Image (cartoon, rainbow, N blue to C red):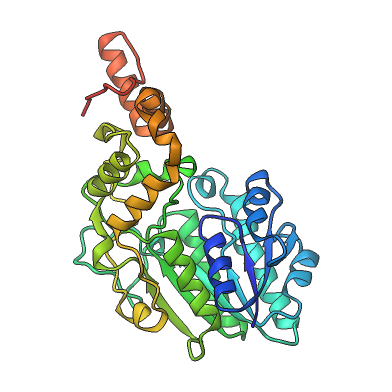
Length: 336
């Protein structure tokens, strides 16, 4: 089977490409030629076809879609960039998806579209009884979520076969790719983790398995990956040897995360391979020999992480105005 993966060298994309190759698919990759993308692409030398280009360019997209039987669409601008530059993000998120659909309609193959949607479209749901289900009412509050909903609506209307996967939280395994979005998760929030390699397995299965057209599936890690924001942050930072950050670094407002009903998606796609504990062990392993340096550089890493948190910066400034001294405190900070 011939499959195009957009955003092929992102957090989920590399795992999706690997899983598709394991399923004997012929894979074509579309991504922008950033230094990180090119570095990740080296792992697939001579195994895939790579087209470097912008999904906003209809000619590039038409070339990428030509001859494909399925498209795994992962290329999307996520928060915080989608909120900081929402109009620009819309040209990629919505405009890029439109280009894919138009190219798919013009193609002889009429490819199946596997679209990666998000739990963000449900909005803040911590006041509701879990889990979240595919047939619930949607209450988006971010540009990112509105972009996802718009793309879902476009899929429903386009006339191509499609599968929509609404993902839970899919943070990267690698420490170097930590995202400031993590600070938006409130400590008491319910969240359901999904290892990026399991997300890759899910999209690969959705691309190649028969009989899935027209389904909207909730995709997350299952009961073994259901945690609170506090449990997730504390265990993750401990696994990396950094230690839990002060709670003042995290939002006090509920975030767009929750437990999810994944019974149907697991039955159909068989992707839930890693528990939260197993993923933590993988996080430790990604550090490799660098683990011996963590005790030495820990204060500097903590300072850098705290500087990424808008909540901690605001807290430090408020505290500084009261005391006459502002600091972004290194590893010994115990402020709550």
